[in-house]
Length: 208
Image (tube, rainbow, N blue to C red; front, side):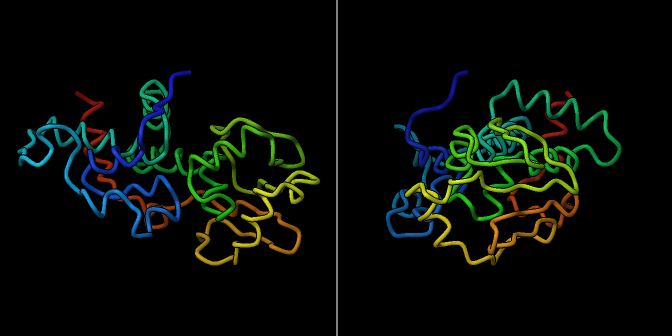
């Protein structure tokens, strides 16, 4: 499956805001967005006025880049959100938030969603006792997520676990750091999803 393999900091610069795609690096002085907050390219410093369609498109691209999904996936998620009860934009965000890779990131068991996706693909996590290596796997309230046996022996995992303090974990999740087991308490509400997105613009774009 095609994936963007270029410099991820260009994505933040293109959208004009930090998307926190590199974890702790985004909070340090090494962040490229701090040094060059204008858009990449020859005309990046020039001011651009977006049309209504342009604003909608940029918002959709921003959401895609935050969660690291492809356009085809985005369309499928939107169609699924339309079929569910509730406000379509909010339901779309809830679907993205309950992806397994995002849940691992929200539990602070990865520095970024990209790293979380890699850890899931490598089979480091179990859901309800079963191995799941699909980043897009949708978790449900009541699901239990835990590290596989022996995962803490990995130098990468060991470094992550040493940095986890159990803080800044959203209320819809809980983590027991004694046995490294997490539980999904509920589907997150819009107030619990802290992504800088105006989801109504995305709904307007796909409803054209």
